[in-house]
Length: 113
Image 1 (tube, helix red, strand yellow):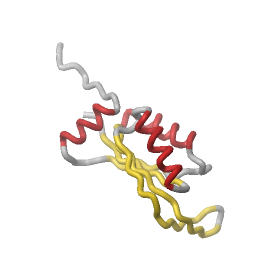
Image 2 (cartoon, helix red, strand yellow):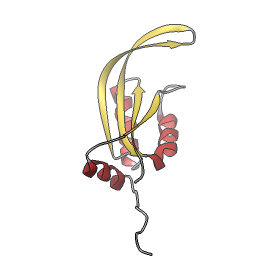
Image 3 (cartoon, helix red, strand yellow):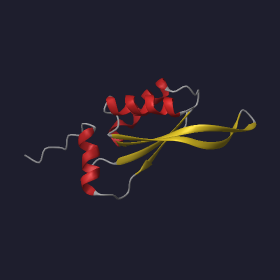
Image 4 (cartoon, one colour):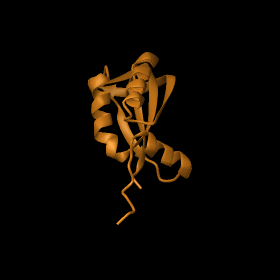
C-alpha cells in the first residue's frame, strides 16, 4: 500500500490557511485539511529571533502526490520560504487510511494476472 503522510504547513493567517486547504483538497492533492486558526510562532529569520501569530494547516495525502502538493503550496503561499513538512503515518485506522488513498485518486495495482 502507498504510504500516507500528514503534511504540516504554517500560514500567515486563517484566510491564507483556508485558501491553501481549499486548493489542496479541491485539486485532490489531499483528501482532508484541518485549519488551526491561531498559533503563536517563535523562529529565527535572517539572523533575528521573530515572533508572530500564524495559522496551521494539516493535510492528509499519499506519497505519490507529495512533489505536486509541495509545489502547489509553494506557488500559492505568501512566504518566500514556507514551512511545509511531511510526516509519515506509521499506523492508523485502516478504513480511514484507505479513504485517504481513494480520495486522492490512488489506483491499487491489479491483482489479475
